Amino acid sequence: MTEQGERLQKLLASLGLASRREAETWIRAGRVTLNGAVATLGARVGARDEVRLDGRPIRRHAAASRAAAFLANRSPGESLQHPGESGHESLIARMPARSGRRFVAVSPMPRIDGGLEIFSPDGEVAARLQRAARQVEAEFRVRVHGELPPGRLANVLTGQLDSGERLAVLRCEAAGGEGSNRWYAIVTRGASGKAVRQLFERQGATVSRVLRIRFGALTLDRTLPRGRSRALTDAELAALLPGAGCATRDAGAAAPERPRSAPSSRGRPARAGRRTQR
Image (tube, rainbow, N blue to C red; front, side, top):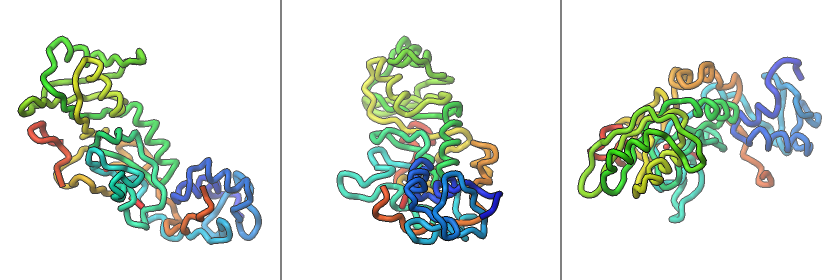
């Protein structure tokens, strides 16, 4: 065992086997061995060290080929993590096995809504992206029944939520529509999809759809149909989180099967401008 290298619990999380907290529980329970000996919490692992979980070797030789994060275009109502009521696979369940077996969503949209989603098989990268999401600029399209009077639209711009908290709303304007439905484009900083929906509902609006179309420098476009995902490039990840583009490991992705005992449409609404797993 080397004095250098990555902490064991962080390695297990980065391979998509568990969250770091779950990995710490496994280590305390004596389920993880390092070079044949029961591992201790905080032990560091080098490229030549052998790690086993419940006796099964953890292979790390291909980790550099696995992306650190993914972007998806999720359809409203489609499950990100779990099978839907119809029994259809979730978005993450359709990811190639080599991408990882566990993913963490970053500021996910409510199930009823959709649009741009970001998720990662690396718990550390996901946690850093989640912290960054509190400050990142994001753009949404909101579909409501009827048109908001100027006074109520001005109230949306205040960013006032039911809790008394105020969101940073940078812009909100009409974005077309047809029949009795109207779309609004809203740009915020650090807002979740749930909070954006609440901004409109507290003005008496009946909201039928919220789509996130931009997250920082990432934008949905016509090249990514609904229900599909793609890996983020290092440049895209670095634009969101400097240094995160290098978060793929020197060793690793062909992780073992997790032990059983262990716990096309457009991304942008019609007439509202252009603008998602195993």
